[in-house]
Length: 416
Image (cartoon, rainbow, N blue to C red):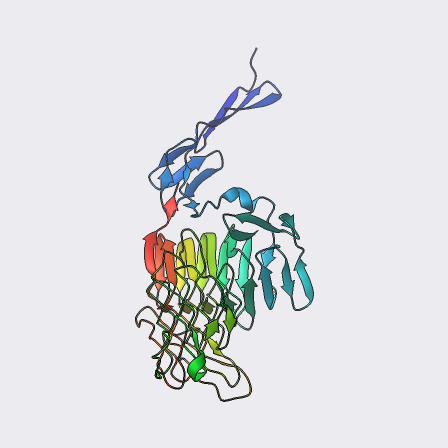
């Protein structure tokens, strides 16, 4: 005999929970959840409805569309990378995976996850992964090493301070070519200028090539035997590039003879940086990968060529730029240096679209809007300026009111 029979049914978003009281015994039966499904721009599962900002994918299992990063980076790299990186001044070593801060080691060298921060080398990229990267407004992060720098966040990246992946002197930024010091160079690098013994002067070297060709180095002054030609600017090149992520080319060396520099070393190429975040990237500070200026040795002649700017890739569902992203080329070295110390053309400008100025009679660096210029002959040959690099922003929702130099390429981020 059934006493106090009561049936109460509650319909959930997916599935039915039924409570039945038979006599004084109560048993709860919960139907299995129905299959996860997309309804317009929402995905429904056992926990309810979830809004999808960029649409719902019906492929099994149905899910909100998510970012698919470029360059072979996958979400598997985020496993175990739970740290929020927001320390003060940091240096990222893209070769070893070490991160150094003001107070010492933040992450030890080596691959895998250490201190909640992952590191892997993929296609000449050093990929650091974490839950979040946040660069404070009063701090600077720098990078160096043979590989390009990638910061990969499961959530967001915010840059309010300075992120510097540029070249310094003859040392390239992450994955950037070193500056010429006499020796074989490839066609993207600036050519070396020769030395002319009959009037003891050096010719200028060519600037590194990038988005355009680099500026040419100037010849030596002519004498009864004629002039000695300067090095040619590096050709417009596939590098620097954002996909694949590659750094900039270096400038040649001025006044070389049998691979011995009698002029000045070339400026190195800017590095390559990618900021990849699964939700958002916000830039209120400055990101730069400038080429270095070419130099002229003490009391010598024949300027080194400026290094080309590097490459910056920003990739996320939402990108906001109110600060600056720059990949400007460096200035060429002076034709003559009367000082007792080496002098250099300017490093590519950081934070604006102004050309780096070469040393006296050296060519100016490129900015993308303005091509690099060639050196001038005056007592020796000035070095040519380095070319600008490459900037790309891949996103589904962009708010870009800041500065990019050169102008950025804008494309749709891939989703699945």
